[in-house]
Image (cartoon, rainbow, N blue to C red; front, side):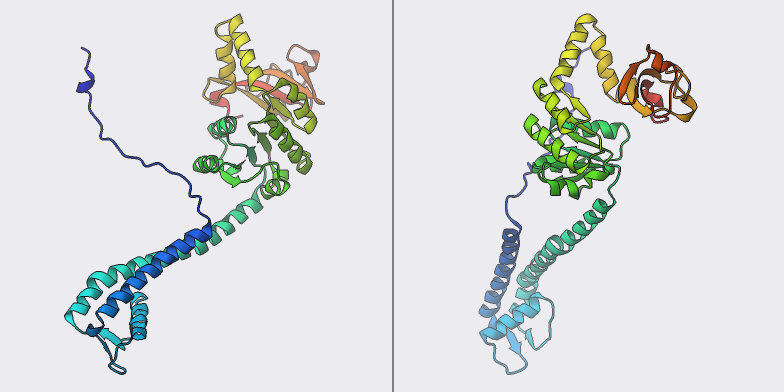
Length: 351
């Protein structure tokens, strides 16, 4: 028996307000906070001046405007020397109902301002400086667009600690999204030397570049290669003509999503399951995974089709040259070989 939509349990609607980063500079925010605080103090001064007859000065018995300002400041700051005090019932009611809430608000404004702009910023600056000083063997993602964000999600899914990932992007919302994922973030220009030096680019494990434009990506690759001659660089290039330029700029791996899509389409034309299997290989969520690793000591001298990991060896890289599993070079593994294998995802962590 089918159920009508009206029969379904209706969940209460939860209002979720939009969020947008403020464009106000820090100095404007500080001035606004202080302005509100002093406006509240001015209101208290006015209230005390109007009700000055209910105040008593134990020094000379006369309440001047300066006495009102003095009493307001020691009252708001909860100093309370006692030389001036409210004596009438109306004055005490005003202190309890009007002045006390304002006093609390003013204290919150001053304490909040001091925390946000002094303590919090100093603490965050010190904490991030320690993190930056200790950065090593980390992943640096330059550009957090569609490709960069997907790469970060895949790295985390493969077991990479988000604390070992550094994201650089010029967009505030993208930086916030990367920070929400648990990554270290730095908002800035990834083609700038100082920005890359700040994230210890020379000590990185791998650099992933996805700037959204080929010219920007190639410029970033050039900058990274200049600062980190030995760090592997993978870059996303969308125009086939620019792939050679990216390699000449120093990219270790050049990934063309358009060409890869073409490969998937062509593979699907040759068989309905080819494209599905290729996608399975590329993603951590599949049953199998492609993995590159150095040859193990116990595998040296053995064949590529008899790996200790239990994976299926596909290719080796020896002296920078690739050899397939059918070639003679793959029949006897040597020290220094890099192996590309297909493994069951259940055994990925074990390897």
